[in-house]
Length: 154
Image (cartoon, rainbow, N blue to C red):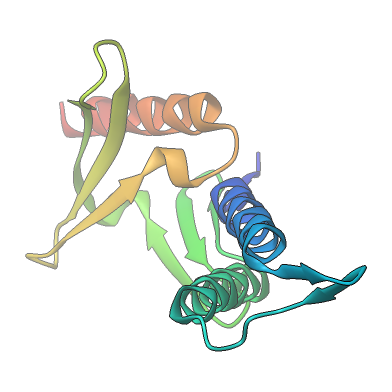
């Protein structure tokens, strides 16, 4: 039973679109209309700042698109990977899995985290479930894995 969860890029798409629209609106508002022609003020530092922000946003979007990060669950393994490498973790190498809900500033909004502690490493693997598509299904997969581990340890 394979289940693959791709990295969620909607935040990058939305940010790029919002920054681009703000850039275009600023250019339209700040530009001068002289004798039925549009004249752009190239000495405006805010214009350069907006351009830099839009460029950085597009680069971040393209970088994350080309990386193609994912988490894949198989019968006895979890695969953390991207386009260039895959890290394979056997469930027998996992010491414990903890699921957290961190309350955000809003009253009913939560930020979910999964911490995986491996037997051979001191460092824990931290996963933000909101970074991946089908967040609820991903959490269910981690809960199933957590119950498997509890049964194995008892």
